[in-house]
Image (cartoon, rainbow, N blue to C red):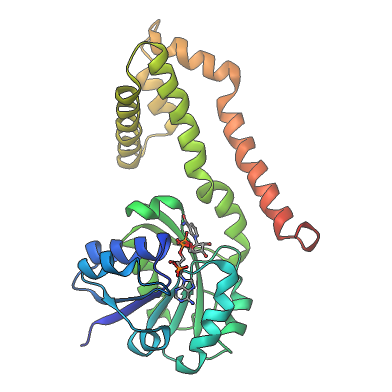
Length: 271
Ligand SMILES: NC(=O)c1ccc[n+]([C@@H]2O[C@H](COP(=O)([O-])OP(=O)(O)OC[C@H]3O[C@@H](n4cnc5c(N)ncnc54)[C@H](OP(=O)(O)O)[C@@H]3O)[C@@H](O)[C@H]2O)c1
């Protein structure tokens, strides 16, 4: 059986990160190809074993799964330029924010399956969370293959397109919430006299360690939090302050505010 060929048109930050991630985590499972308008990003990718294609049409002819990672306003033109090379067995996956399945279907002239993928920025370091909308991918084998392919770079989940706004508010914006919390703790460390770099390194390790514990355990998070608080100890003093300030409610409200903004931006009057 021949290996699956996966190609990416647009090899900037996101396209380059996807190809680099697959070069590391899907080696042997697929052939990887890339085409970028300016040749700049390709040298690094070629060094990782990715084939640089001479143009987008050659890439589409070579690859069955075609990722499109150009800016949203460039998607229609790029797909229009390769439309004649698209055959019914191909699957086009766009990572462009806000470009709908309907727009993708129109751009490929209905010639092949189309899918949307919404990554978050940790995808740039191979630890993303990917929402996939596969409503216009009729083959179950193709659906499973896409979930597995993106799952090699973190977590992939299938969502209806109508849930993409909520996903963006929680997971797309999520790194900003986490960085804000990290910033506060780093600042606290500096206030207590730790050099900034040391404080940042410790806080980064704290988030990694706590995330690993949460991922491994099935205990409720509030119980994990309580387990750290010795009776009469210093942790409960800090946690009481968080509760008085309503940290949990603040986080819920932040996500709801982002969701409301996302919906307003999607509404015709919000454009
Ligand atoms: N970066 C993120 O964190 C992130 C997160 C979620 C979604 N996304 C989505 O990912 C997409 C790409 O974003 P990005 O941040 O990776 O942007 P980027 O770094 O600017 O990359 C886009 C790349 O596409 C290339 N390109 C433009 N037109 C092309 C064409 N006709 N043929 C081949 N290549 C072409 C550009 O090449 P030139 O250098 O020649 O212009 C550039 O290298 C966007 O649609 C964005 O919505 C990105």
